[in-house]
Structure formats: C-alpha cells, structure tokens
Image (cartoon, rainbow, N blue to C red; front, side, top):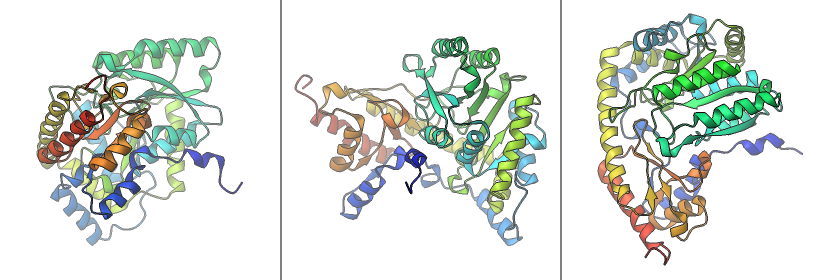
Length: 411
C-alpha cells in the first residue's frame, strides 16, 4: 500500500465544509463562515505587535534561532507567568513551538508507543485525536458534564482510573489532557474541579496537560485558574501561544511550559528540545514580535481588554438570539468565543448533525461545524466573532431553518 494506514487520521472537521462553501460562494451565494475561530479576521492584530514584526525583519532577524526559542521571547513568557500566575520558570522549562498543534505533536511523539493511550474529555478540540492517533496512540474518552455547565465529570474520571489500575493498564496511559477555557463549549473550569483533577493525576501518577490558549478571553464574571497555580509538585504541562490572547493566529507560535524537576518532567523537556532541533526553529521574526506583545504589558492590556469586551457582547447577543429557538439548548459560555448548542434532531428532519450542517450551508449559506467532530453528536459549534449585525443575520437564518425543518410533532 502506497498510502500509510495512519494517514486516515489526518482529518479536521472544522474545515471539512470549506470546499462546498467556496463552491457556493463562487456561484454567487452569500456564505457566512462561522466555523473557524480566527480573531484577526474581525479584530486586527495590534499595531504595536505588527510594528515589532516589521522591525525584526528590517534588523535582519531572519536567520535560524535556537531550536527551543528566541531567548527574548522565552524571557517574556517566563515574566508573564511569574507576574500573572506566580509560577517560576527556568529557561529550559519553556519550549517555543509552531503553534499549540506542534507542541501536541511533540508530546505524542515523545510519549506514545503503539498501543499507549491518553485520556481526553468529550467534547474535545478535534485535532487532539488525529495527533494522538498518528503517533499510534488510542484515546480513552471521558466527558465534560453538560448539566454542570460543561465542567469535568470528575466521578467518571475517578472510576476510569480506578478500573485501569485494577486491570493493570494504567502504565499505558501517558497523559490526561484538559482544555481551559474550553473549545468548543466556552466553559471556564471551576477552581475546585481543577483541584480534584490535580489530585487524581497525583494519586494515579498520570501526567497532566492543560491547554490554556484562551486564558485571557474570559468574561461574564468568570475567573480563570491556571493549572500551574494548583499543580505545584504534580508533573504537568501548560500549552499556550500567540493565536488567541495576542490576536495573531497566522504567526503560528505556541509554547509548552514544563515547570517540574521530577523525573517525568525532566525527561519530557529534554525530548521536546530534541524534537525542536529536528524542525530547526519556529518563525524567528514572529518570535520577536510575540515577545513585544507580551513584554509591552500596557499596550497588551489595552488591546486584549477591548477585544474581550467586544467578544463578551457578541457572544451574549448570539446566545440571546439562540435562546429564542425551541429546538436548541445552550449552556452560556464564559470564555473563548464559541457557542456549542445541542440541537433537538428528533424534532427536526435530520438524522445527524452532519446532515444538519450540510443542509444549513446549502440552503441558508451558514457554515458551522458539526458537534460529532468534537465528540458530541447532535451539537454544532458556532463561532461568535463577527459583528452583531452578521450574527443577527446568521442566527436569524438558523432559527428560520429550524422552524422550516421541524417535524409535524412540533409544528
């Protein structure tokens, strides 16, 4: 066979409707794309960051850098976590990557042998699965509790870990991955839930990974807690980057923080550094621009505050519009910029969420992402970044689409 067996895992449901959407747009149909969480489309990357990028180019910062990252950026990241979360980091604890996706690829390449597994929670960010599967790993799926505003279902996780230990399979579980704030639900996990999660990871000796790429996009009175604030002494990793808080998705810069000095953490950061050498370096001028984005705290605070205030307004507006739809249930998000409603497919003329999003795109020109791509069938993900008039148009069409396709039982 010419094509590898593992290549079947190279899928991204967020983009699977793009070809159809482009064909519809080319035919003259108006298409509103609410499938991709790309802030700079609606909130231009701050000028002071762009100017730092230009200055880096002009000053010749276009060579390779150290594989694990430019020292200027690593120092800025360390200072951010010391000031914001009271987390002390050494230079070797910070590995700059080409987005969080590459950090996850490093993680799986470092830890996963064929037949090993990782614990993920449904609904999950769709790329967690292929990156695990491409390394030969298998997922163990736990869940967030929709009835508890999508917080981690701790009892289920505790039961699974206990069973794995009793069956002597726990040593094949390489990590637990949690997302906070969550994509796709927009939940900001409660501090008490995180403390229980850390306790379980410690009790069963499983490495803990927290994807915190939206850590400053929090609103509606919610408070974000970094796993690093409570996991002191428990082996863990924090993932973050430039894409969301710093409004620079196209920079493709992320980082992994591995603060521990325990055996697992030391081995992991050494191997991350090795994998970084294999790809030489991340985007160098972008690293200097990102460093300026972090270090210029005053301008960053101004930019991110304005963006988050507007995101809060748009998300809450879209939530209110969806609440008018009797075929939809929605937990209000308090972080990121997604809505993840559950659609009453039984009361509509659809068998699956894939059929729902396909027909919505074809008939109404609204592009969403199916919830089954996140491990949550009968849900859809809606990106709420566009201005209110666009959201009003899109959700108005969505609500009308549901009414039009209601079964006779609910008419």
